[in-house]
Picture 1 (cartoon, helix red, strand yellow):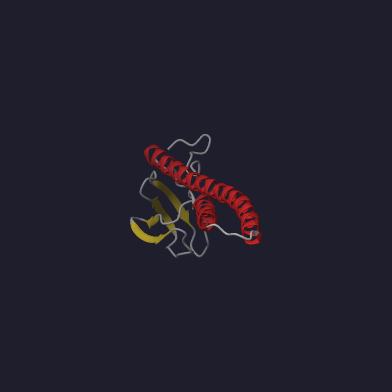
Picture 2 (cartoon, one colour):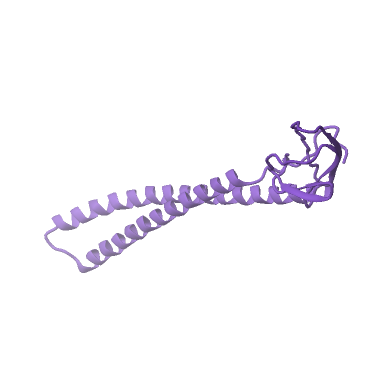
Length: 179
């Protein structure tokens, strides 16, 4: 059986749900029907020999309307997953850029602080400027960390979404299949 959750009926009586293990029926001719929402009803008459085991393989074929709806939904899942992945990648790139800018500004700030500390006469305006630059570097570092966390979350979530997304062609009718 190619679909889980399909109802299996033997002579109009529910015998199980796919995937199904073996079940016993009397020998003779029986009608086996397999049905699931969105799929074409599969019905076969089979002859069962007394005290013998028979194996019956039935492939459910999706209706064209269900197949279309499934493919649209699966494409939507994949598009959302790729969007989240792209957002995660952009956030990771932004984090890298913020890291680079922050590192350059921190290096420049260290030089300015050393120069300020080596001067004999210190100016309050220069001191306030250094404090302002220090807050700016701290904000860049915070932005770097937040963008990095968002990037990792987006990449992980998007990857998980893509891994779990349905294959849009999974229900495509096999070549030559005619419901």
